[in-house]
Image 1 (cartoon, rainbow, N blue to C red):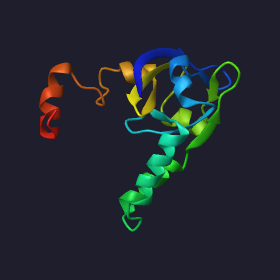
Image 2: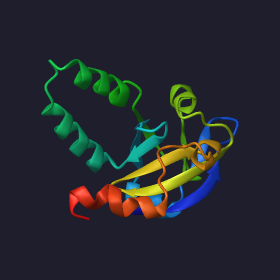
Image 3: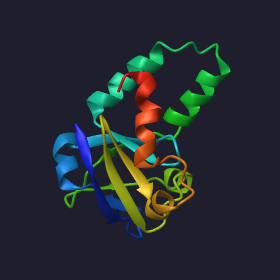
Length: 143
């Protein structure tokens, strides 16, 4: 399970260092793809396969499902770590997530989220909630 927050950066060759505590769980390779909320997701190969099994059950006759598949798989990239523990973020993914130089890497249970630091820290980032709002928002799920 991935958890914790790290602040890191991307170099001029679009390489980011994946924090070592995350790399240990990822193994030698991973999948990087578009996430929701303008971030990127990193999955272990095993968890990526689980995602594909879920997607296989979705009805492709639904235009929203087809759009999601294009969003999620269309720019997915299998990444291998170099000797310094870096992966390359393809330009399309970098543009999608509005990545500049500084990153925030967040463990999010079965995946890692990669955010442009300025997007993550933007007060208008509506993907974040105030602590006092969690109770109300999660009440319907019995949490």
